[in-house]
Amino acid sequence: MTGPTEVSALFSDYPAPTQKALYRLRKLIFETARENENIGELQETLKWGQPSYLTQRAKTGTTIRIDRDRSGLGDVALFVSCQSSLVSEWRALFPHLTFGGNRSVHLRAAEPLPEPELRQMITMALTYHSAKGKKNPAVS
Image 1 (cartoon, one colour):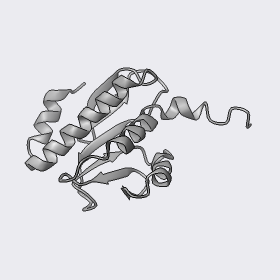
Image 2: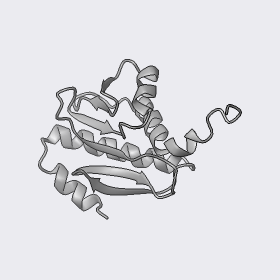
Image 3: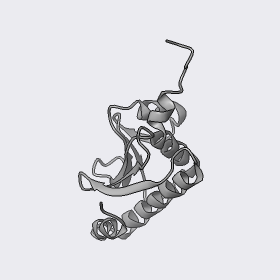
Image 4: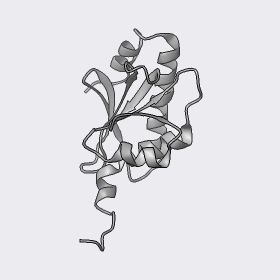
């Protein structure tokens, strides 16, 4: 398992504004998880060379990854599995944000993070599997 040291080493090669935005996003992920009893503890690791955050509890959520944005849509991005329905749901909820395909939301380092929207997206991702089982239980 990796941790803050490996994440810091990765971020250290990025421009200062990108580093600052990624650290803010990382902090928001941990705060959101800590504030929601359905999420529990997070594991921080590197997946595909990107800081990744996943729940310790089995079948709770899907992994969130963050990194600098190489697409040109923003400076930093938050990624989830493209097999999930999350980005489609986020697009419907937050049409004013910038999304990349079916796997990411893109943010500008010079702008304040849209914290309320990100908190909801982070919660949706980190409870994705547990919430799926609760959707429309009367419908079979």
